[in-house]
Image 1 (cartoon, rainbow, N blue to C red):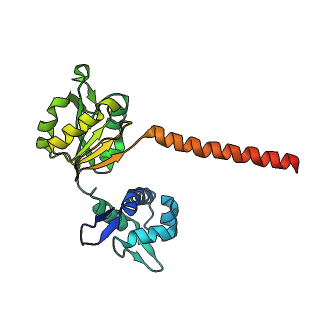
Image 2 (image 1 turned 90 degrees about the vertical axis):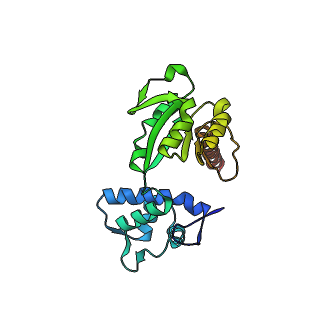
Image 3 (image 1 turned 90 degrees about the horizontal axis):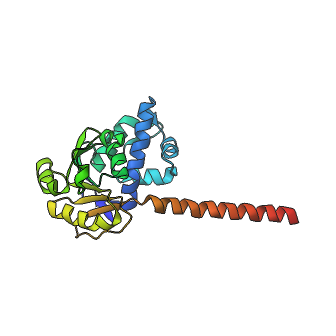
Length: 228
């Protein structure tokens, strides 16, 4: 799967698209540190990738480096932000204002990276009237009107798994075409709707797998040293 660049018909591989926000974050940190230029090796180290992969990824965007000088950090940051669409203000709705929904609503990274939470929605009547991060919690039934009023294209699902599919269906019907799903379940959507899934328990299980392997290798190493 790939995405087209904003300025040409050239396609960017999906794996590269997934790394662009990582480069953007690294470049933002470098700007905040007062760094004006950096080499591909320095940027790769800041982003946690190898430099060959970084240079390949950036080649899809154009030629922004200068031989012997490197990259203009602030200019490259702008070009990547423009490519992935965060130089504009994206209105976002969050559905499900439990503990996770509260945490997401209070996440300052949304505002600093081009996303503006315009509505917090919940089906629980007891949540109505709450104010989280300066935004009132409203009835989920207001979704259609909010999408029309703010031109919302991105929705975040932070509900229990049992409600996620119904919420996704309602989002799509209202005109939302991109969904970030934090519910621990797989949702089905129509063609043309993009879904990104974030499952914290799966990420922890992956870490547990690697930790288990490290412990097993350490045990094997100790045993071999004892018998040597």
